[in-house]
Amino acid sequence: MMRPLFGKIEALGPWTAHIQAMDQAVAENDPGESVRAWRQAYSAALSHPGWLGLLTVAAASLRLGAFPGLARGAAARARETYWIAFFRARQQRSLNGVLHAAEAFGVLGDRATVEQCMRVAEGLASCTADGAEVDRVRLIAARLAEQSLAEERSGAV
Image (cartoon, rainbow, N blue to C red; front, side, top):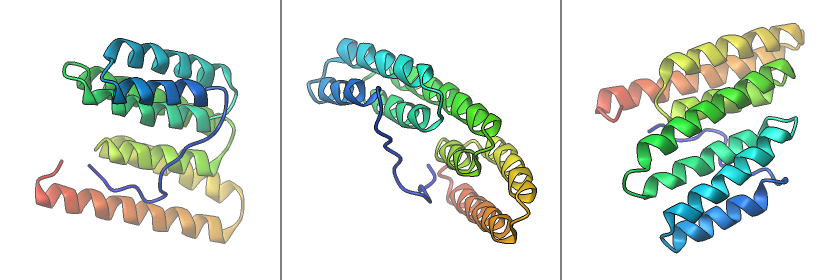
């Protein structure tokens, strides 16, 4: 999996207590309670108008993969939730949100979706008429592509 460029996103919000409960249930090896708490966190993030909570909840979903039999479902829920976060960020014209979504898809090893997110990011950056933002997007795109290629060469993807 790709190493994150931006670092961990943990946005505080109405989903926070549910994610903490999920993490506690994971630590106590309680898959049923873990999934229940994650669903509550997901519902809270979905009800919130922003994209940050969805990224936080998607990342939390991946931790459910610690339980045998839940890894595939956890990854699928994370992917779906990252998509919702991406769509919200795009709708809100949030360059940072789109870039964080691109990175999240990179962590999942989804290079095609990373490229799609980066095209949207390029469009958003060019609309700002801020050359620094355009350069920032190009730099991040290059770094994401470089990491992806390095992992492909090493056989990690």
